[in-house]
Amino acid sequence: MTDVGACTIVAAFASLGAAATHFAVAPSHFTSWPLSGVFFLATAAFQTGWALAVLRGASPRTMKAGLLVNAGAILLWALSRTAGFPVGPHANVPEQVDRVDLTTVAFEVAVCLLALWSFRARHARGFRSSFSAAVMIGVVGAGVTGFAMPAVELAGSHGHSHGPEVTDESVPHSHGSDEEDPAVPHGSVGGTTNSPPPAGNTPEQGQSPQPAPSHSHAPGTAPHDD
Image (cartoon, rainbow, N blue to C red):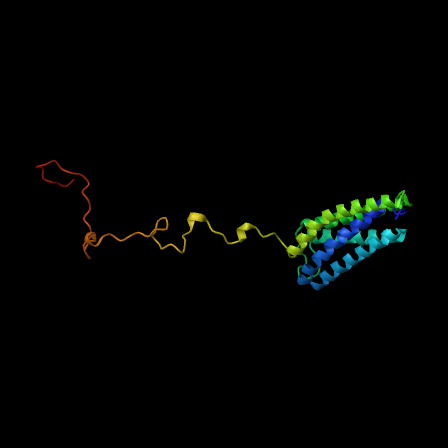
């Protein structure tokens, strides 16, 4: 490992991070379109194998293969999020951009940039000792794991979706006091039903209550029409 440069180690672990997210989202893609699930599994398998091959020795051919595959994955992702993938059950329907996508693309961009840098550098600058290489691997591995785990957990808990995001307006909800509680009878106030008037004060059937006079007259004065 002393012959492996720091950029090579970062590229390898970035490829492992992208592979982890691809493995995590593959089951949901199998549900919507099996061919899409196969693609994600194949991409994840390549990124895993590429990372292991790079750690053993980053040849120009290996770095070029990683550059081409990851760049192609980024282009397909951009197409699916803008115009929509041209084939499949959700053809020409743009997909949502979420944290899982952004995390995966960040890893793939890192692989592409580091692969291009390796072509310019030509020779990897190794470490002075195996301990230095081990420390570098531990730091990079922990950083990639901490960055990838939230996306992996999110991919495992949510399904694959297309089209506009569902908002709270499309979910049935109550409006507080604007709606009546079905458990409270109609005509009740504050959850207490209105009690009927006493039997003695109930007006007889067919007899309407007399309206109250609008004003009074002085004693000894006969009422008159206004």
